[in-house]
Image 1 (cartoon, rainbow, N blue to C red):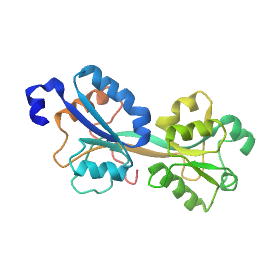
Image 2: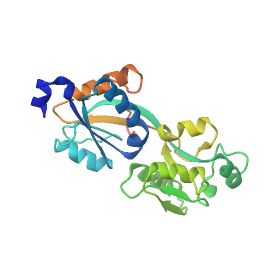
Image 3: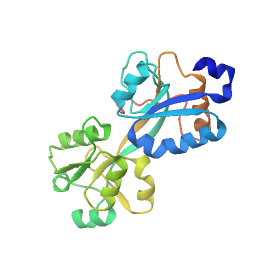
Image 4: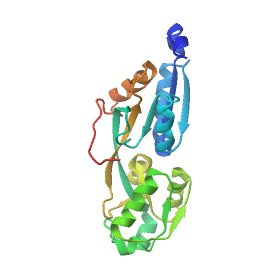
Length: 229
């Protein structure tokens, strides 16, 4: 594949993996820009949980992975980051019904009475929600839904509250459809990390990253915050 690219640089191949939130909200915009600049490029996108994506990266089946911080995985390198927040969100109308007029701060007791919409086991956002439950010693009713977009729609329709990335719900919060609730450690600053293997970023990945840095979408060199997932 790389030899073919040397013969025809315009026919580059970008193999990218991403967790669901990034794939659903950020990557369509990022890849549209990349394909505009390199219309003959072949793009392969793998959507999975972080553990699976890092496994594919170590096996040289992906060039770059966009997910939460990979921890101390041997040989993997973070080449860029993007800050975002994990927020507990609810539909503004329903939040007022459940919690009263002041929905800016939510008590654990009230949070435990409302259904939480969760991703499937293995999802990072589900793990974050469960960490909040453990920290506050609450066991709210829950509904498992295997898609972030379906969860967001469920929140809008009043099915419950959900922990989601600000990248996914910023527009709805700005429009007043959803509200961010302060509960325990939430909202919490996190970072998407763009991770490559020990050999570094191949040319197609560098071509993908640099315009995003210039547009302010990514921070290069990467900004790393201890403890941020």
